[in-house]
Length: 136
Image 1 (cartoon, rainbow, N blue to C red):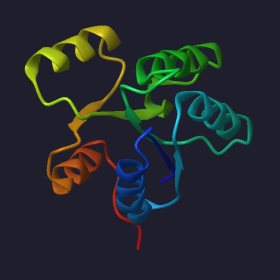
Image 2 (image 1 turned 45 degrees about the vertical axis):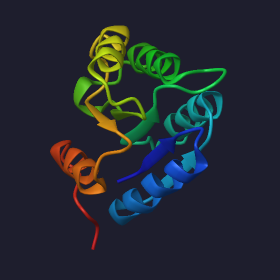
Image 3 (image 1 turned 180 degrees about the vertical axis):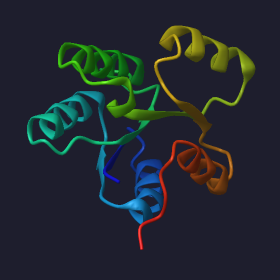
Image 4 (image 1 turned 90 degrees about the vertical axis):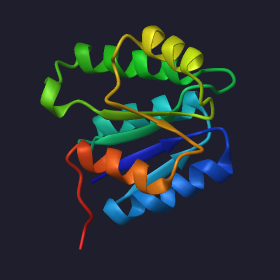
């Protein structure tokens, strides 16, 4: 599996990267603009990312903007639904109000949602739910 972590918090980002590296190649970027560039480059090189762990609240270009841009690129390039990037949204906000805003703002264009303060095993369960398995 080829994955990318996008988080302006380098500590959180590196924790996610360490866990996802157990599944295969994992890259880390700390802002939305670089994430979008990395995604486009992976498509152009014929080795697209399969999973993105995306922090929703970041300065400059937030996760919602990144994800909408990615879905637009997938549509323009006629990437089939089953081949599109799988996305786990992350946030530090652990309340229903913020979760509701995120869900409505992104209109279900992501596959899963993870609160950063949760147990890392829960995060790995979400990765498994998307069909990804550990590499030997």
